[in-house]
Length: 199
Image (tube, rainbow, N blue to C red; front, side, top):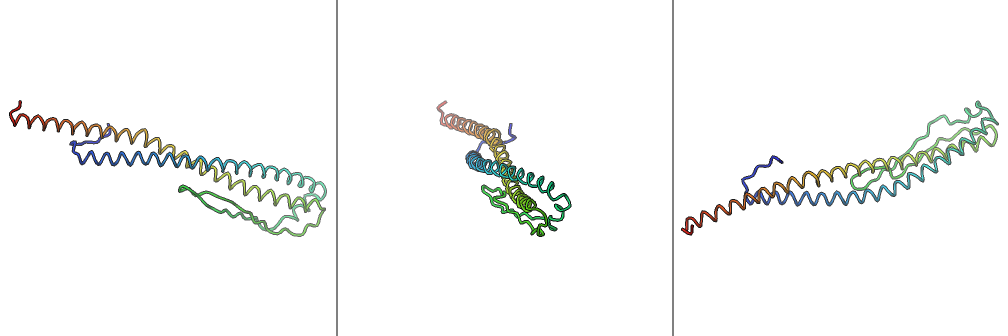
């Protein structure tokens, strides 16, 4: 039972009918939100997969150039060519349906000291910059997918709660109130007949 106690008045019936209409509208809106989020997830999934493939390709190329550079120039020359400062990532946030998620990301890589080794060292530096930019972009796409997927799961849970608990509970309350009102009307009708001497 829902714990709802009612004397069976028409005002209470109107209140429960209003709450039931609100619950049904809420379930419709949650269903609509689910469809919108699912469409967004499909696009984000594709973007995340493309970003991951681009990052993996760039990382493999960077690893090849690193191996070549290490063989040609040695580890000491490689360390000397590393920039002194760290790279920084900037994430542009956007959103829809009340969710904030990364729409894009960019990476700013500090200037490297002039390479003093072979041409493979310059290619390795360029390949690693490209791989870093691809990694930042892929991470933003995967984070966006994760955040929207979590919101979709939460929306599904809310919709199930409304449809499987709240609406049936309100329908039960409305039925009980309507039965009480019908009983009261029958009693009133019988009283009026009895008073009129028809019984």
